[in-house]
Image: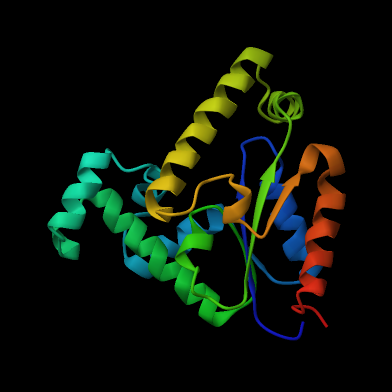
Length: 205
């Protein structure tokens, strides 16, 4: 590697984004953060890990609440707990980016690091049938329950991302450097595609 960088991966539920990120990090021999990030946030902030996990990628309550926050800025001690957790997340992600190359899954990392020069943003999606099949096998669910979980989880992720990302939109090609259909390429070839893109961008020697 010629310079430090961060790969921020957003993903649809059931698209294999976690596995792709983990395999990419292993191929690059750099750190990988998904659920591991929650433990680090708790440690850095002094918050309970259970609390951080509870509010993980949880959307804010309402648009009216966001307007009130803009009109009447609060100190950290006055913030609702979900806002405190998000601020702790921001601090930890920025700290990681300043210290090492890594792959980060979700948590608005691409927005948090939008001013970070060496950032690559990726969105992993897949066809609904492929996602359903993956979730059915992985979570041992019926087709109906797998589809319901996919729809609800993606709705939650989109709400969280769109709230904190302001001008960017979850899943929008314009919001990411790469958008890849993992059901067309497969997990391993998607990893290769991202790896090759990093080479083209000059992040790998």
